[in-house]
Image (cartoon, rainbow, N blue to C red; front, side, top):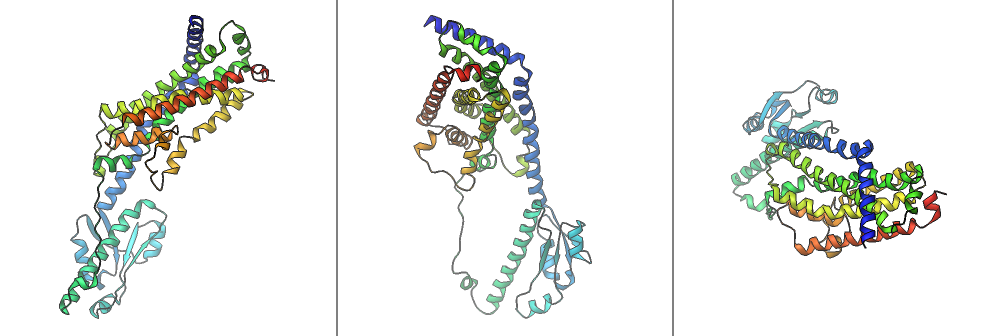
Length: 393
């Protein structure tokens, strides 16, 4: 046992030193993290601009003299400014002179006075998705005006407006503001998990395929030390870089949220130290299984470049749970906690939503990732006993 621990410590120290000397390992960890706060700010700033754009709308109107009551009512609404529209609204919208235009036909007043359906047109390019909120609000305002006029017409005829509305639907939102905000920034768990995958990637490749390509793996395996201690040292070194990347990612995510314009979106999220610590505690066990998987894949490759190609495909794994839950939530079942990455992302979302994380759920995810790491280490140890793997033949 003493020989095993001593050999493991020697290999671990060697791999850590090599990792810190390798600029590729450091750049792969630090470069993406340096961009996280900027990415957060840009994403939230664009979202807040879209919301602000929908609150303050300038409506170019063509033919406003045909519906002065409607235009007057719109002009009284908060954040609405009426402007004279262009003579050729379609060309103006197509050329980008105006974002959209409201066109009122000449027969609007006549049809309106005759209690007939009076139509208006909203001309929009349709390619600029940032205008969706603004156009949707203008459309809802006009529909609201129409419903008000319809109610007045029914009342004049001695008919209750309730006759025209046999069913009324009201939506009761049960989610808290914290949960709604957590849903908006639902990509955060993906970033934290991606930090795990990126951190130890270069070390896992260099300590397996890289050493074999340099010819230093064979002498290392010849020394009288347990094979598992050599593999364990390499694994722990890669895991150390992965854990460091996870901690730095969490710190950068916190900084990005602190300076992101969530207040302009009318949202507020309380990610205190306890929530962030809980999120980090959830993803830390994942680092051990991820680096073990990366070592297996890199060991099977015949060269360093081939190992980079294979391990790069593993970066798609954190995206699968996001794709699976894009349109619908996964049911609350024990099996989802037993799936690495999926379980961690689910627990992080629960923590950010203020629901907390049950100790049993945390234990299930930790044990499942530990079992997966054990299987990957056993496979790596088995591969290291094959001549084709060791000598690269």
